[in-house]
Image 1 (cartoon, rainbow, N blue to C red):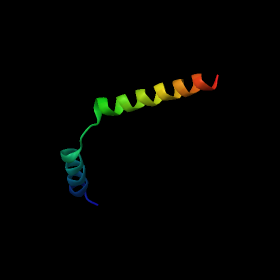
Image 2: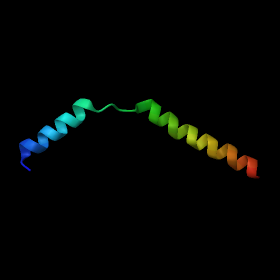
Image 3: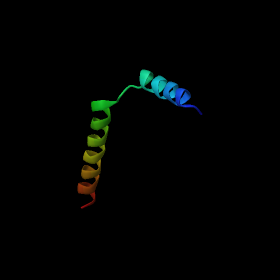
Image 4: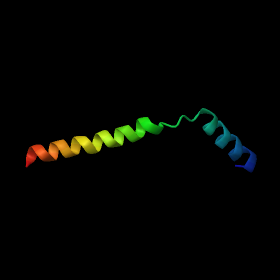
Length: 43
């Protein structure tokens, strides 16, 4: 693979990449919240 091939792959990836941002963060937060609730139910 040449440098030009690599650069093309990277460019195409980031041209189509969508950062999940807050949606991803919210998923992590929800996961932690659910674990806490389930933990409270077991105690």
